[in-house]
Length: 49
Ligand SMILES: [Zn+2]
Image 1 (spheres, helix red, strand yellow):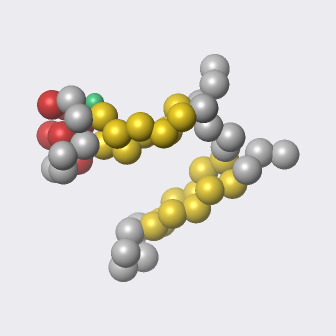
Image 2 (cartoon, helix red, strand yellow):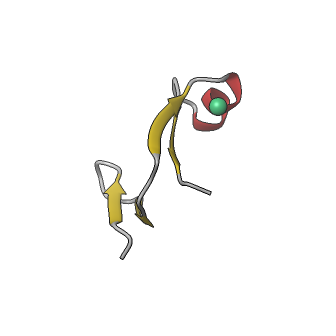
């Protein structure tokens, strides 16, 4: 059975739930991710193929 992970922004307007398990969690600081998110990085989860 896959683990389920939940998260949200602080106010709770945006929430998500994804199924794991995940191989790794990373923050990408490339220019495309900074532009797309409007922040210093994007957060990404990688799953085994
Ligand atoms: Zn990137």
